[in-house]
Length: 197
Image (cartoon, rainbow, N blue to C red):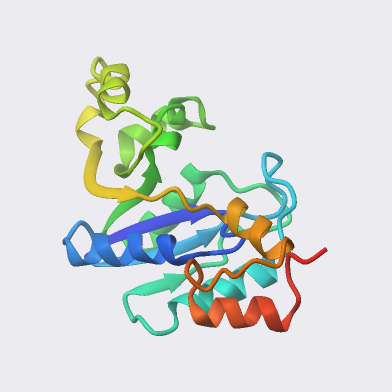
Protein backbone atom coordinates (compact mmCIF):
# COMPACT_ATOMS: atom_id res chain seq x y z
CA UNK A 1 0.00 0.00 0.00
CA UNK A 2 1.09 3.57 -0.71
CA UNK A 3 0.41 5.92 2.19
CA UNK A 4 0.54 9.70 1.89
CA UNK A 5 1.40 11.74 4.99
CA UNK A 6 -0.22 15.18 4.87
CA UNK A 7 1.14 17.56 7.51
CA UNK A 8 0.02 21.08 8.32
CA UNK A 9 -1.47 23.31 10.97
CA UNK A 10 -5.03 22.76 9.63
CA UNK A 11 -6.24 25.90 11.38
CA UNK A 12 -8.93 25.21 10.17
CA UNK A 13 -8.83 22.27 7.73
CA UNK A 14 -10.67 23.21 4.55
CA UNK A 15 -12.10 21.70 1.39
CA UNK A 16 -8.88 22.09 -0.59
CA UNK A 17 -7.02 19.93 1.94
CA UNK A 18 -9.64 17.21 1.49
CA UNK A 19 -9.75 17.61 -2.28
CA UNK A 20 -5.97 17.21 -2.56
CA UNK A 21 -6.09 13.99 -0.50
CA UNK A 22 -9.03 12.50 -2.41
CA UNK A 23 -7.52 13.43 -5.79
CA UNK A 24 -4.17 11.84 -4.88
CA UNK A 25 -6.07 8.64 -4.10
CA UNK A 26 -8.27 8.79 -7.22
CA UNK A 27 -5.24 9.32 -9.45
CA UNK A 28 -3.43 6.40 -7.77
CA UNK A 29 -0.53 8.38 -6.35
CA UNK A 30 -1.42 6.83 -2.98
CA UNK A 31 -4.01 4.45 -1.55
CA UNK A 32 -4.58 6.25 1.72
CA UNK A 33 -3.87 9.69 3.20
CA UNK A 34 -3.11 10.34 6.87
CA UNK A 35 -3.51 13.95 8.05
CA UNK A 36 -0.98 14.88 10.72
CA UNK A 37 -1.65 18.23 12.40
CA UNK A 38 1.37 20.19 13.63
CA UNK A 39 1.69 20.48 17.39
CA UNK A 40 1.15 23.86 19.01
CA UNK A 41 4.77 23.84 20.26
CA UNK A 42 6.03 24.47 16.73
CA UNK A 43 7.63 27.91 16.97
CA UNK A 44 6.92 29.08 13.40
CA UNK A 45 3.16 28.85 13.84
CA UNK A 46 1.23 31.28 15.96
CA UNK A 47 -2.46 31.83 16.66
CA UNK A 48 -3.07 28.08 16.48
CA UNK A 49 -6.23 26.77 18.06
CA UNK A 50 -5.62 24.01 20.60
CA UNK A 51 -4.33 20.65 19.41
CA UNK A 52 -7.54 19.00 20.55
CA UNK A 53 -9.79 21.34 18.54
CA UNK A 54 -7.79 21.09 15.30
CA UNK A 55 -7.64 17.31 15.65
CA UNK A 56 -11.41 17.17 16.12
CA UNK A 57 -12.03 19.32 13.03
CA UNK A 58 -9.85 17.01 10.94
CA UNK A 59 -11.69 13.95 12.22
CA UNK A 60 -15.02 15.56 11.31
CA UNK A 61 -13.72 16.38 7.82
CA UNK A 62 -12.47 12.82 7.23
CA UNK A 63 -15.21 10.77 8.87
CA UNK A 64 -17.10 9.98 5.66
CA UNK A 65 -14.10 8.54 3.80
CA UNK A 66 -12.44 5.28 4.86
CA UNK A 67 -9.26 6.16 2.93
CA UNK A 68 -8.66 9.32 4.97
CA UNK A 69 -7.24 9.07 8.48
CA UNK A 70 -6.05 11.48 11.16
CA UNK A 71 -3.05 11.00 13.46
CA UNK A 72 -2.18 12.85 16.65
CA UNK A 73 1.49 11.80 16.44
CA UNK A 74 2.88 15.37 16.38
CA UNK A 75 0.63 16.62 19.19
CA UNK A 76 3.21 16.32 21.93
CA UNK A 77 4.79 18.50 24.61
CA UNK A 78 7.90 18.81 22.45
CA UNK A 79 8.38 19.81 18.82
CA UNK A 80 8.22 16.86 16.41
CA UNK A 81 10.09 17.30 13.13
CA UNK A 82 8.82 16.03 9.79
CA UNK A 83 11.63 13.50 9.36
CA UNK A 84 10.68 11.99 12.76
CA UNK A 85 7.04 11.75 11.70
CA UNK A 86 7.92 10.00 8.46
CA UNK A 87 10.28 7.61 10.28
CA UNK A 88 7.47 6.81 12.73
CA UNK A 89 5.05 5.88 9.94
CA UNK A 90 7.73 3.99 8.03
CA UNK A 91 8.32 1.90 11.15
CA UNK A 92 4.59 1.48 11.82
CA UNK A 93 3.79 0.41 8.25
CA UNK A 94 6.88 -1.66 7.49
CA UNK A 95 5.44 -3.29 4.36
CA UNK A 96 4.06 -0.11 2.83
CA UNK A 97 5.52 2.86 0.96
CA UNK A 98 5.44 6.22 2.75
CA UNK A 99 5.03 9.43 0.74
CA UNK A 100 5.19 13.00 2.04
CA UNK A 101 2.61 15.38 0.56
CA UNK A 102 3.85 18.95 0.30
CA UNK A 103 3.40 22.11 -1.72
CA UNK A 104 5.91 23.81 -3.98
CA UNK A 105 6.32 26.46 -1.27
CA UNK A 106 7.76 23.80 1.07
CA UNK A 107 9.87 22.22 -1.67
CA UNK A 108 11.58 25.57 -2.21
CA UNK A 109 13.40 25.28 1.13
CA UNK A 110 12.87 21.73 2.38
CA UNK A 111 16.63 21.08 2.19
CA UNK A 112 16.96 23.62 5.05
CA UNK A 113 14.52 21.77 7.31
CA UNK A 114 15.78 19.76 10.28
CA UNK A 115 17.51 16.79 8.59
CA UNK A 116 15.96 17.95 5.34
CA UNK A 117 18.50 16.16 3.14
CA UNK A 118 17.89 12.92 5.03
CA UNK A 119 14.16 13.39 4.39
CA UNK A 120 14.76 14.02 0.69
CA UNK A 121 17.03 10.98 0.40
CA UNK A 122 14.74 8.54 2.17
CA UNK A 123 11.20 9.51 1.22
CA UNK A 124 9.26 10.23 -1.93
CA UNK A 125 7.64 13.67 -2.03
CA UNK A 126 4.32 14.26 -3.78
CA UNK A 127 4.45 17.90 -4.81
CA UNK A 128 1.24 19.91 -5.08
CA UNK A 129 1.63 22.91 -7.39
CA UNK A 130 0.94 26.40 -6.09
CA UNK A 131 0.63 29.28 -8.53
CA UNK A 132 3.32 31.40 -6.93
CA UNK A 133 6.15 28.90 -7.52
CA UNK A 134 7.72 27.84 -10.81
CA UNK A 135 8.29 24.09 -10.93
CA UNK A 136 11.16 24.41 -13.41
CA UNK A 137 13.08 26.72 -11.07
CA UNK A 138 12.61 24.36 -8.13
CA UNK A 139 13.71 21.29 -10.10
CA UNK A 140 16.75 23.21 -11.32
CA UNK A 141 17.71 23.76 -7.68
CA UNK A 142 17.75 20.01 -6.99
CA UNK A 143 19.05 18.70 -10.32
CA UNK A 144 22.58 18.04 -9.03
CA UNK A 145 21.45 16.10 -5.97
CA UNK A 146 21.62 12.60 -7.40
CA UNK A 147 20.64 11.05 -4.06
CA UNK A 148 17.11 12.34 -4.20
CA UNK A 149 16.12 13.89 -7.49
CA UNK A 150 14.02 10.78 -8.29
CA UNK A 151 12.19 11.19 -4.98
CA UNK A 152 10.57 14.46 -6.07
CA UNK A 153 7.30 13.61 -7.83
CA UNK A 154 5.46 16.56 -9.35
CA UNK A 155 1.76 15.68 -9.31
CA UNK A 156 -0.73 17.08 -11.79
CA UNK A 157 -2.70 18.55 -8.90
CA UNK A 158 -2.80 22.29 -8.39
CA UNK A 159 -3.87 23.98 -5.19
CA UNK A 160 -6.14 26.97 -5.42
CA UNK A 161 -5.37 30.09 -3.46
CA UNK A 162 -7.85 29.62 -0.62
CA UNK A 163 -5.99 29.37 2.68
CA UNK A 164 -6.77 28.78 6.33
CA UNK A 165 -5.56 32.33 7.03
CA UNK A 166 -8.13 33.75 4.61
CA UNK A 167 -10.89 31.60 6.10
CA UNK A 168 -10.05 32.76 9.62
CA UNK A 169 -10.24 36.37 8.45
CA UNK A 170 -13.62 35.74 6.82
CA UNK A 171 -15.05 34.18 9.99
CA UNK A 172 -13.65 37.03 12.09
CA UNK A 173 -15.39 39.50 9.78
CA UNK A 174 -18.68 37.58 9.81
CA UNK A 175 -18.44 36.51 6.17
CA UNK A 176 -19.88 33.22 4.95
CA UNK A 177 -17.38 30.38 4.55
CA UNK A 178 -19.55 27.41 3.55
CA UNK A 179 -17.93 27.38 0.10
CA UNK A 180 -14.56 26.61 1.62
CA UNK A 181 -15.34 24.40 4.61
CA UNK A 182 -16.72 20.89 4.94
CA UNK A 183 -20.19 21.18 6.51
CA UNK A 184 -19.18 19.17 9.58
CA UNK A 185 -16.24 21.51 10.16
CA UNK A 186 -18.30 24.63 9.50
CA UNK A 187 -20.97 23.52 11.97
CA UNK A 188 -18.33 22.73 14.60
CA UNK A 189 -16.74 26.18 14.20
CA UNK A 190 -20.13 27.90 14.49
CA UNK A 191 -21.21 25.79 17.46
CA UNK A 192 -18.00 26.47 19.36
CA UNK A 193 -17.71 30.14 18.30
CA UNK A 194 -14.19 29.66 16.95
CA UNK A 195 -12.13 32.42 15.27
CA UNK A 196 -14.51 35.15 16.40
CA UNK A 197 -13.56 38.53 17.84
